Length: 102
Length: 250
Image 1 (tube, rainbow over the protein chains, first blue to last red):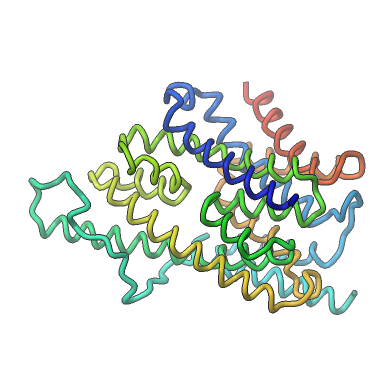
Image 2: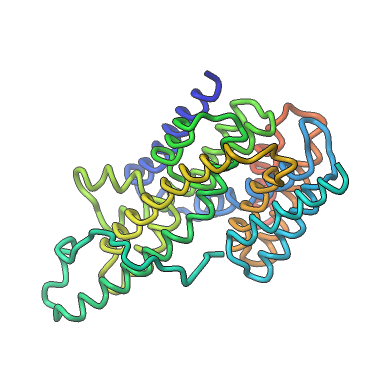
C-alpha cells in the first residue's frame, strides 16, 4: 500500500509539473532566478543521492563495497565510458569487494 | 554519456513524412534527408536509454516494487532520474515523503522544458496531452537542436516515440532480469543507483561553481544522515545546496 501511494503520487505530481510548463506563463519560468533554481536542483539532488546511497545505511555512515564501486564509476565517467559500462563496472567492482570483505 | 553509435538496423519507428506539415516549399529530397537524419538520431537516443532502463528495472525489483508498479512508473511517470531517485530513497529505507519529494523536485526541470517546447511548438488538442507526457531531457534537446532547421516538431515526436518504447521495453527486461539475480550487495546492484546518478550528474557540472555546489550538497546530505529521518538528508542536501548557490551568486 505504501509503495502504491509512492508510485501514484510521484507519477501524478511529475505529470502536473510537466503540465505546469505548458500552462504557467513563460516569463515566470524563464525568469533568471527560476531558471537558476530549476537548473541547479538536479545537480544538488543527484549529488545528495550519490553521497547518501553510497555512504549511508539507515542513519549510519558507512564505508563499504559501495564506495569502491562509486570510485570506479567516477573514473569510468571521467574517461567518457558508455552508460552501461559505468553501471556494470561499478556493480562488478562492488560485488568483488563485497566477496573479498563480506 | 550516451552509448553513441548504436543503431538498430531494421527497427522502424513507423513515422512517415506526412507527419511534418511545414516545409512543403522545400525540395522533397532535402526533406527526406532531414527526416532520415532525425530518425537515426532519435533511434540512437532511444537505444542510449536502454542501459538506464535495464538498471532501473533491476534495481526496482530489489526494492520490492511489483512488476506492475515498476511498469507504471516507466509508463506514467516517464522521467528516468525521478524514477530512479524514488526507488533509491525507498530502498534506503526512507520515508514516503522523502522519496516522493526527491522525485518531484527532480521533475521540476521538466516544467522548464515544457515552457520551451510550448513556446516552440504551440501544441493543441490531443497533441498537447501526448506532448505533456513526453516532455523530458531527450525530446526537448532534440526539438531545440532542430528548431533552427524548422524540424522541431518532427524531432520531438520521433524522439518521444523512440525513447518511450525503448525505455518501457528495457524497464520490463531489467525487472525480469533483476528477479533472477541475487541480493543487492553480493551482485553489486546496491551501487547501480549511485553509478547511474554519477553518469546523469557529470554533463550538468558546467563550471567550477556547479562542481562546488554539487560537493557542498553531498557533504550537507552526509552530515545530516545521523540526525534526521532516513531519506530526509537527500532533500536537505538538495534544497540547501540550491540555497547556497543562490546566496553566493549574488
